[in-house]
Image (cartoon, rainbow, N blue to C red):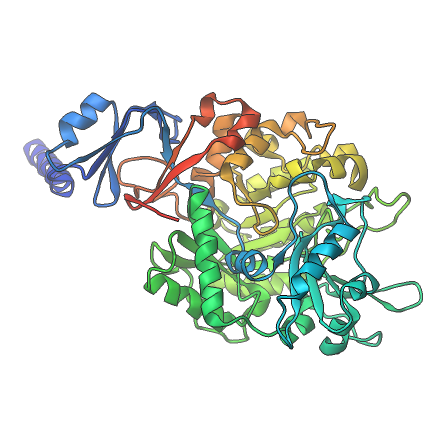
Length: 570
């Protein structure tokens, strides 16, 4: 019997060895060497060389060992010349089509530099755009932000926009994506009047003290009548804009990105077909993990199944929005905002708890991953309570990898509960940089502001977290996120550190834009670290972020992006 067991063991061992030899024969297509290779494996090891064969990583280690085993006469040798090789960045929360529409086809008013815009400079940019609007067209723009406007919280009204034009309809989406501004011509064409009821899902047509429409819109459901009247962009123009956007994403070193709201900007079936056509015709230079926008799913829809797709395009989740924007004063908080003084405003939840639960449960039971936008602590409470109910009786809740998007204003108890439930928070870490001063000094005060994006708290509790841009809300730049997560220095002078005790190490921040983000999208088995058997998704950087001063990491240049062992061009 002992002899039989030994023979069985040897037979299995021989089979494994033969399989590895066949899979690895004869040599590597490419060997990278001559610079630090950051593996981002469980030990955060840094090695000398990496070999690629057939689009996959077949070796990492010393240059001598990798070359001896894998180098042949046909192997391409790439000398990094001191540059750094690391896993391609993973971006778990981008609105790809939204970015293409806002920055590629609309007027991009986003301003992430100093000085801030004023209402006058914004209006001047809008006037300059008028000459390019065709007859019957709308002036569509994105990116105004009262919290980053001088004076603080200066906000556009329909009367302001009428100064730009009374004949061309104007529709502007705030930088947060949760607030809009229209002129009176747009209100007229959309058929929105003082008697129009607010739409469900948190939508509000804002009125002044006299009951007159101000031109301000709150939450995406209030955008719908205006978007319905805007001429759709020609399909060729939209495809061109999407390709340009995904190339821009790749140029930032990103090899895999989420599309977080399929069906938000136009009918779901159209956007699903668009993405499938792009993937089938090599129109996506990056991998895409897609999330369907829950409210856009028609009743009885069966056009997609959970995890449908392949390594280039896969539909993996359903996303909901539970509240608004913190800097827009619409996120749902448990205690009132600090701005303006003596306000009772706490923001509002977009849905009742039971209503949102029933919507989520349909797709949870089908096997979809669920992601919920929750900025305020009230919305986070609602989401965690709903997740707890969804996961009731599940012995391994972490297997569902439920997501909370932003997790901005939060409490220590919420962090602990999220970790217990296996919830993965995705932090829009640009909140710290671009809005940190406004949060701290005006909007929610120091105590709440210092806990925004609680990276260190999640690490302490043993949880995972990821960083993202929420583009077009902030720019795609994972190197910037590393600076923001490890340094937490806000932009506007006098620059200060927002919540020093929430800073994490550079290695932790790197993991938040690689392996943790891949885990968040059920892709950590194939991407996110440089380990044997994984896809050769790589980025070459001009300097090593591990040895660069924290606030300078954002300035490191992305030299090359590789996907499946192939260098990408943009």
